[in-house]
Amino acid sequence: MSLAHRIIPCLDTDGERVVKGVNFVALRDAGDPVVLARRYNAEGADELVVLDIAASRDRRPTFLETIRKVAAELAIPLTAGGGIRTLDDARAVVRAGADKVTVNTAAVLRPGLISELSEEFGSQAVVLAIDAKRDSNFWRVMTTGGRVSTDLDAISWATKGAELGAGEILLTSMDRDGTQSGFDVALTAAISKKVMVPVIASGGARWPQHFAGIFCEGAADAALAASIFHDGIQSIRSLKEFLAAQNIQVRLPC
Amino acid sequence: MNISLLDYGAGNLPSVERALQRLGAQTERVCTSAGVAKASALILPGVGHYGALMRALDRDGLRESLIDAIERGVPFLGICLGLQALFQKSDEAPTLQGLEILPGSVRVLSRTVKLPHMGWDQLQLRAGSRMLAGIDAAAYFYFAHSYAVPYHAEDRSLETRATCSYGDEFVAVAEKQKIFAVQFHPEKSGDAGQRVLDNFLRIAA
Image (cartoon, rainbow over all chains, first blue to last red; front, side, top):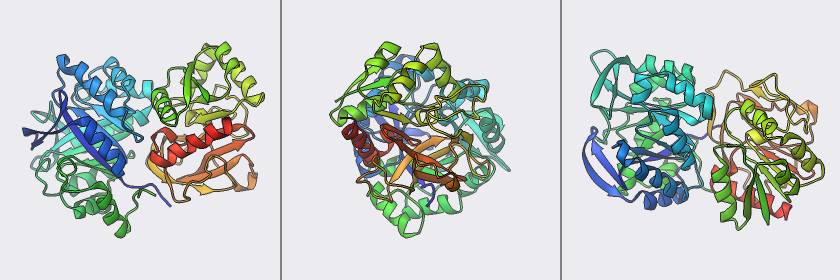
């Protein structure tokens, strides 16, 4: 009897559609968020993440509408983010039906945002999203959808974020994202073993063995993937059955 | 069945509302003591900070009417912080007084594990539970909290019907007459959670 490892599908949205890229570029259409949300809820997803990758001000009403429609489909937790810069942005997302909000670029620019959100919604509702890219001898934090480098080390930033009140780290390996070559086990383990909040590993999932590896060697508390679920390459149900057969604790539908 | 949801600004209120409506219940939001006094069944949803909840109840003058309704036997369900509010006090806001309906205090979970306790976990049944009737013993429920009411078997606290272990063993389901409380989020716990809410609706009907 212990906490189950979570499987989390992610919907990267641009306006009203779900999109998917490789290494954060080369976007293509991957479906209707409401249809996908309904499917994942029924298939046994443990949570759903919806990210607004455009994150532009003029598209914000469309994104909030997407959150509202998606939330109406779900009996599982919903995390939403992309372009959250202020407490008001976060409030709008929570009012639209998100249980948790992710912050990324704005938190790097102004770390106090993490504390503000945590004081308002509780740390269980604040997810610090970190996009990390391997440099010679460390993992560098990237912002603005992976386009801008920072001087931050991903391990120290994750630690600082948890201290400021983030209740969870959504850790994306930019080197692996969209490549289907497997999660970044070394990156995830380095952060998950250092930080005393749950870590969601993201980027690179393809085979069920990748999930087994990220939970065991990578010490991830949850694993996130997008295209393999959207494209029907991997069903959540059969993935969970595989993991359960490997004695990895997962929530199987009763 | 008309269920009154205490609206003090909690983020999870719309999800609880939707989950109840899916089960065919009528819901209304109440935010005044007069509204609470008229309720035929009450739910206190809760997410966030214990201090924010207790201060909101006092700010809106809801504390007395809530205690009064519970003592009159109006069916009551507390969710997450709504469970914690029923106890004496909490480490999260030590200077504030709880509703003091149930014995025991809310403590921070053990620092030996990652906090928050976030995700899907299983329960250990401690006594017959009406809230968990018809639910598989291996079912998972969604938790998202760092504070909980520690469970001590030797206390023989009869209200505790199920516990969960994460660092410490804590109260996951408490029941006493028409008072029900769950530390997890039934509105986010898939089919098992829907069943818990359905059980409450049947009891309240």
